[in-house]
Image 1 (cartoon, rainbow, N blue to C red):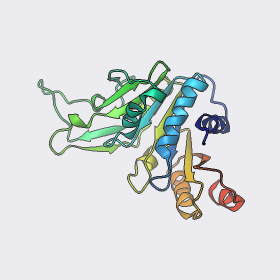
Image 2: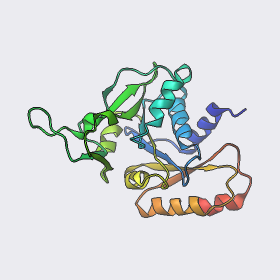
Image 3: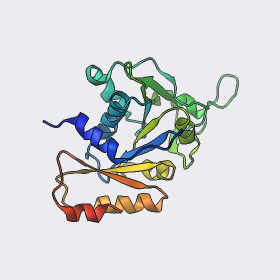
Image 4: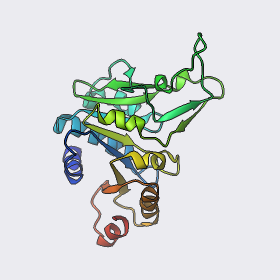
Length: 233
């Protein structure tokens, strides 16, 4: 049986110590869907909050599906019950924009930050975000922004921010936010023999201005050094 707690402890240790007095933003992503990114991001958040005793925000970039909120709700026995929704932006900034903008009854623009909720998970100091798609009206669409304002705000608010980034097959969100992450961890299935897609994503993250600093082999341990050499910087 896989010991998730031990695996996450090893992953956390491999990322190195954080800078003093500054929160760290870590993106978890993969070249292909189905590699287990959401599980790794969620379990890392759980470990960092409970095992390492840090305050953690788990930010889900898959806005429409919100898999993290759904998984934690379903796994309340493991993770803890979710609190009522709260404000998910410390200063009103946001990593996405909703267009065309909606307006309140008074004619004011509905702020983008009002579409994102944060739920505290159990008694630990960690929160998970959920995009409130039910607030969208008409033909509104959501676009990830190439700006660091929201991430900088969270760095001042939490010790660790873990970002669940969808694979490029589904969205360019992970690449859009890559320049504003302190670290990006690439998840690869241990039975994956083809290095091309992970290597291409590594190059794309680097070209976007991101920092690929970790590699996590899901569902077992890889045994081919050539694979490691082909992917790691």
